[in-house]
Amino acid sequence: MIEIDEIHVALGSVTEKNDIIENKFNLKKGTIYNLTGIKSRTIAKYNETAESLAIKACKKFKKNKLKNITHIISVTNTQNLRFPGISNFLSSKLALSQAHCLNLNLGCTGFVDALIISYGLVKNDKKSKILLVTSDTYSKFISKNNKATRCLFSDGAAATLISYKKKGFKLKKKIFKNSFNTEKDLSLIKDEINMNGPAVVSFALKDVIPEIKKLSKNVNCIFSHQAGKVVMSQIKNRINKKIFFPVNFSNYGNLVSSSIPLLLKQNMIRFKREKKFVICGFGVGLSASLALFYR
Image (cartoon, rainbow, N blue to C red; front, side, top):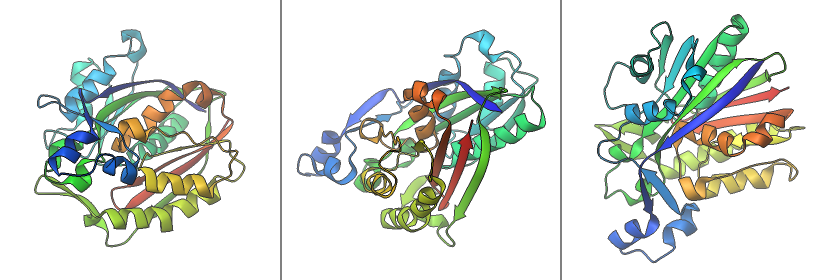
């Protein structure tokens, strides 16, 4: 029914390793990796924004690939300008004057949410050709003195082309979860990101992982948001050992809505041949979005 044709990624230009933070806060070498499982993160330079990273990712496509785009869906929590949305900038930079621009203010569920919306658009009109772009620069909204949050998030963008294909994948089931009165547990307040780490982990363990476990029965593969060592190890321990469960957080940290498309790109050969798989995003909200697809 739909197919992901191609994915391109643009990461923050600076690679920040843990020793920078460990030295600043007089932490023992290896402390951050032992706690998070993350070795390094990609950080945007001062002149890199969510908008510029999104444009950079899209410009990696050959021009003919972007012909006849009907929709541009952008996903971000941290665009540089309050408005207009990133999709409007992309429309201008890519000369896509006829594209329907949609802007979603979403976090770690964003790619899954936009993929589900894309599925509905293509199902309604097989001629739809969608450019789905996720982009965030969380580092610009995290205090340099906030060692707990700073060591988790990376900056980057991903651009994904979605279109109709007769033998593409179909959406079999979707699940959405929201935890009440947790909006401030991962939020942007006065231009600074605040995160209640224990609350986010608790939500993942109590509300998200049980849904992943139920949805993953008889599937071959799970592509999950890369939330870090604690949550990812718990997911791995609770699913069937035969399920392919790729991870990349060790070298990339938490890329918010771009974590899943990067994971898909790195495992594209395997992804293209999968018959049944789950895609799962969870975080800001606190909320989760899961989708079961099959070919």
